[in-house]
Length: 194
Image (cartoon, rainbow, N blue to C red; front, side, top):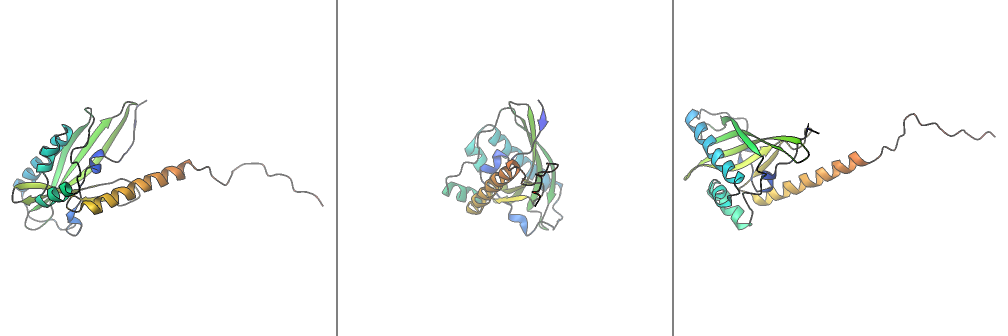
């Protein structure tokens, strides 16, 4: 049976977040060169993750994100199914200096049961001394909640948010599995006549 379902990307179990929450609404001048270079950095990052090359993926983080995730012993390249594919879409300069770019991507996979999952992830890149590097990410986990923002430069906050998401997934699963306490259309027992 083939179907579609959303799931929490394994990439988010890695480590990451958006430093840009404050800069979210400010589209700057930037330029197509900045966007192209930021997209190339995301391509290198995602390729490293896809092949399970933690060292190469780590090199694509900002210096601060690299130091913080290493300090906490977080892996950057979790196992990814060989069938998974990604596509890099739009890029948008966020700040007036053109040093922060959001890059939209999709990650698609079909599991053994034939369910295809497509997740949309916006990666935050920043121009660091070493070039364009990954700062964090944002993705929609629940349709009725704001996107999850993960900052690779603040892994403690990232881990706390991932725990909150895991707890919310469990809470929603329990709520969906609970039988309704109100039965509709059920016959009521007759009242005793006095």
